[in-house]
Image (cartoon, rainbow, N blue to C red):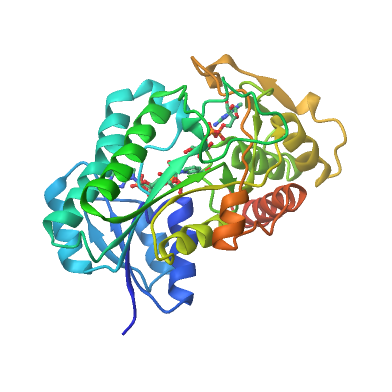
Length: 330
Ligand code: NAP
Ligand code: GDD
């Protein structure tokens, strides 16, 4: 019998990669889609017709119970969230309801539908929970035992999701695991995140469709990996006999300036400064200055290792956007 997986956040970047991975492994894949008209539905139905869509919302408990009853999953991957850090400052209550309490709603839906002893659960925790402020381990990076100090409504909501998942593991013996994932990017990354915003703008500048790009703070450093590598780690967490928490990261950190360097070099531009303007609108009330992860536990226990390196990631994203922009008229 094929295993069955239910993915929340199926229209997002990670949902796309994870659905492909599970489909290739022979799973029956169910995905939760929200809204009475979701513009991403048509694309998803065209590109990934194997996904069985269920209309539900992370803030509506009864819809999640129904999703559990329809999908009857062996594994639930909770990827849905308000995931943009800047947006979370503008919509903090929506972020708390979705990114925080939404996790509780999924866990309770599993229990209410009788799955607490049989269903395996993955929670999308994040390096944003570390906050960068107390960074005091040069060269080592944050690991599963590092202190949390979230710096945004998003990070605070994710910390609730992280701890309620651990609490359900300890209280009810659920096979519930948290992946503390550092930034991961790629061809399915939303345009609102800095890497895709840059790769898209670079492609448009090359094709004469755009003159410059407006960005916020260029100094922060991130541990950027490829999303396709990270969903493999999520799956591996749920194949373990025991649940647990794992950091997935590359162990390298780079500034946005370094990303710009490599991205513009892809189109033959050595100095990007004439093409970049700073706009305070893209700055945040509090910033995470540096993120660097230590994936030793995942490498040892899960046998996980990232495959795509930083230059490979930038190249992949710019190449993809050059192709897409060459095909599109706007
Ligand atoms: P993403 O592209 O922003 O996708 C977020 C998904 O959540 C979308 O499918 C969105 O659906 C869905 N969603 C939002 N509100 C919802 C609601 N009320 N009910 C149901 N679905 C809802 O995020 P991602 O990059 O794939 O990340 C996946 C998860 O990992 C997120 O929880 C994120 O916070 C976490 N994470 C991401 C990273 C990273 O670097 N990518 C790192 C660490 C953790 P719509 O299409 O309808 O908006
Ligand atoms: N989005 C964006 N847009 N960020 C900008 C811009 C801009 O125009 N200019 C500078 N930045 C800076 C942000 O201030 C931040 O320091 C950095 O670029 C990265 O921003 P994002 O790409 O939005 O990602 P993030 O690190 O805030 O959050 C992502 O990674 C987290 C894991 O650490 C998201 O995917 C989160 O959902 C995820 O948890």
